[in-house]
Amino acid sequence: MSADMWGYQPMAGYTTGSSLIGYKVEATDGSIGKVDKHSDDVGTSHLVVDTGVWIFGKHVLIPAGLVSGIDTAGETIYVDRTKEQIKNAPEFDKEKHTGDPGYHEVIGGYYGSHRA
Image (cartoon, rainbow, N blue to C red; front, top):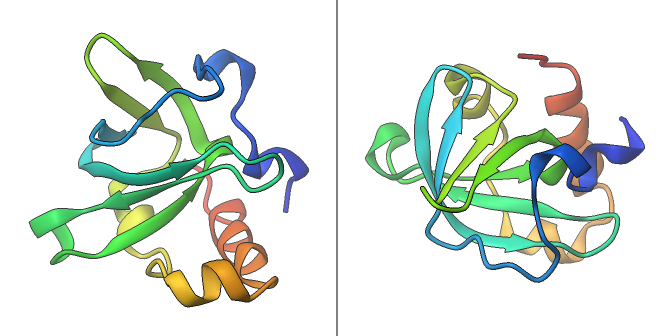
């Protein structure tokens, strides 16, 4: 897993402390949902995306390193993975996210092995 998987890339256009809640999220091949939660904590920055009816209300954790761009005027975030790759990602697990140190490794490993 790449060390920069859990940090926003400088070219993505994220400003520390900005709220991304409610932003639309676009995969490389279309819309996947909206940001429900996000974090810009060093080493664990991420988005929690509510995929809504697209995949039956599943929430997915997307490492901030996959954000390829942010359109603040259009409130849209672009991620460097396909809809299918995100659909097949492990579902967000709030308990493991906060209590299991290996959880981020599993998520990072999944996305690291699936390039757009």
